[in-house]
Length: 123
Image 1: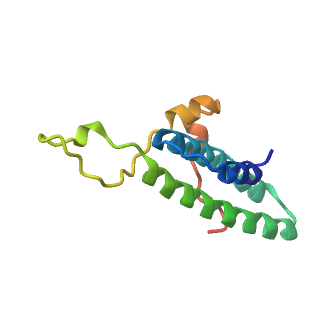
Image 2: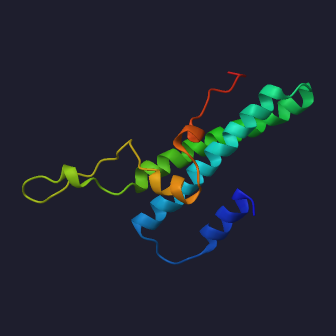
């Protein structure tokens, strides 16, 4: 299955989802799309034919937008940090920019160094 078909199948299911399940789902997608972006960057760098480079560039631009979108969804669905609980037991709700991807990396057998995204050479 490709990523887009898998996303569509998951979105078509109409059952309620917990925050942990949503965060896990978006974390896995973020890791997979980041790997695709890295592979497309390598293809673009080593491609000699200008026609193929144009197609790879447009695909990379789409994937970059999707990675940014997934990053925003990860921040939105991140579980609340227990260190932010005040003395009266209430918790302020604000998005954390730091998201734990360790579970998704373990499940997909990816090292953190593979997840580093390089700036595309066409920028």
